[in-house]
Amino acid sequence: MRLSKYFLPILKENPSDAQIVSHRLMLRAGMIRQAQSGIYSWLPMGFKVLRKLENIVHEEQIRAGHNPMLMPTMQSADLWRESGRYEDYGKEMLRVTDRHGRDMLFGPTNEELITDIFRNNVRSYKDLPLTLYQIQWKFRDEVRPRFGVMRGREFLMKDGYNFDVDKASAMQSYNRHMVSYLRTYERMGMKAIPMRADSGPIGGEDTHEFLVLAETGESEVFYDRNILDLHLGDRIVDYENWDECAAIFDEWTKPYARTDETHDPVLFAQIPEERQMKSRGIEVGQIFYFGTKYSESMNAKVITPENSEVPIHMGSHGIGVSRMIGAIIEASHDDNGIIWPEAVTPFGVGIVNLKQGDEVTDLACEALYKSSTLLGIDPLYDDRSERAGAKFASMDLIGLPWRITVGPRGLKNGIVELTSRKTGKSEELTPELALEKLVKIYADL
Ligand code: P5A
Image (cartoon, rainbow, N blue to C red; front, side, top):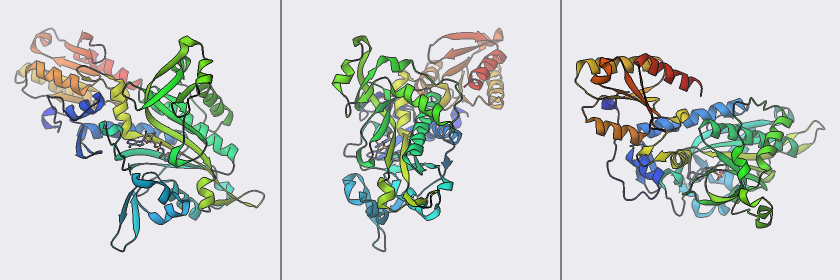
C-alpha cells in the first residue's frame, strides 16, 4: 500500500477525551473513530489489525476441531424468555420491537440461540462432542463505556459453545478451550494468564478468565510469579488426547492466579513472599462450564447409548477480539507510539523515502515496494512529499515493527537502513539483504 493512497487520518495532537494510552494511540494512528459513546468505526488500519486477530482465532479454533459459523446479531426475545435470562439480563441488554410488535434484542451473547439450533438439529450422542463458534458483533449497553474499544457497547467477540454427552466430556472441551486460547494469545505475541474467576450472568461454577497484565486494566489480580515462566511455544498439541489437554490445563492452573472476585488471601499467603504478585489486568477472554443450565430450561437433549434421553452438558468460551487490540497496545508501546508484535502488525514493513522526487531514490523505493509486495511482506510505502522527520514520526506512531529508510546518500553505496521499532537499532544493508531478513522474520512466525 502507498501511504499517498491510504486512508490513514493521523492526529498530531492527543485527543482530550481519551484517558488511556491505547485509546489515545488508536485515535491518533487513525485506526478508529467514535460513532457514538462506546461504538466505533474501524478505519482501514484498525480494520486490518482486527482481521489479523480474527484469522489467528479462526486458525487456532479450527486446529482444535471446532466448527466456524455465523449467527445473526438480532435475536428473538422468546428464546431468552425460555432460559429466564430475558428478565435477568437487565439494562445491559438492548431491546427493540419490530413493526409487528415482536420483542427482539441485539445479542449480548448467544447461549440461547445456539442451544435452539442444537436442539432442532441434533438427537444422538453419536453427533457429540460438538463445538460451534463464531466471530460476531455483540452489544452490551454498558453503564460506563470507556477506554475506547476496551469497554465498548458494540464489540467483536469470538464466542464458542461446546455440547457434550456428560460432564467428563464437557471438561475435556473446557480443557481444550483453555489450551487453544493459550495458543491463540501466544500467537498474538501476548502473555494472557488464566485466572480462576466468577461466572456472572453466563452462569456455572467452572470458569477462568484470561488476563493481560497492564496498569490500566480494570481488574485487580493476584498471582504466583512462576506462572510468567510458562510458555506453550512450538509444542504440537493433540487436541483429541484428553490426558494431554488435562496435563496442560493442570500445568497452567496450578500456580495461584485469581482475580479480585475469587481472591483468597490465606491461599495467597502460602506462596513464598518474593513470588506473591499483585497487579492489574485486562480481561481478554473467559471460558465457562455451566453443565445443563441452558439445556434443561430449553429442553436440549440427546439419546445416550443406553437409549435414555439426557440434557446435554455445555460450556461457552469467549475472546474479546476488539478489546484485544487495546490490550496489545497497552502492553506494547512507547512515548512515540504503538509497537506492533510482528504477528498482528497491519503492515510488515514501512518504507520511508527520504527524498521524494529524487529519481534514484524514487526508483529504489519503487523496486523495494514491488519486491517486498511480491515476497508477501506487505509494505506500507511512505511516498508523500513530507519532511523526513514527519515521516519518521508517523511510522513510529503507527508502530510497524520494521522500517526501511531509503536515501540518496546510502544508495550511493548501494545500501538502505533497516530499523527495528522495538529496539530502535538500525543496520545498513543492501536492499536484497534487508528483504531477505524480513522474509525470514515473517516466515518464522
Ligand atoms: C463466553 C462466550 C461470554 O459472554 N458467552 C459467549 C460467554 N463471556 S464474557 O466473558 O462475558 O465475554 C467474553 C469476552 O468478551 C470481551 N468483552 C468485551 N469487550 C469489549 N467491550 C465490552 N463491553 C466487553 N464485554 C466483554 C471480554 O474480553 C470477555 O472476556
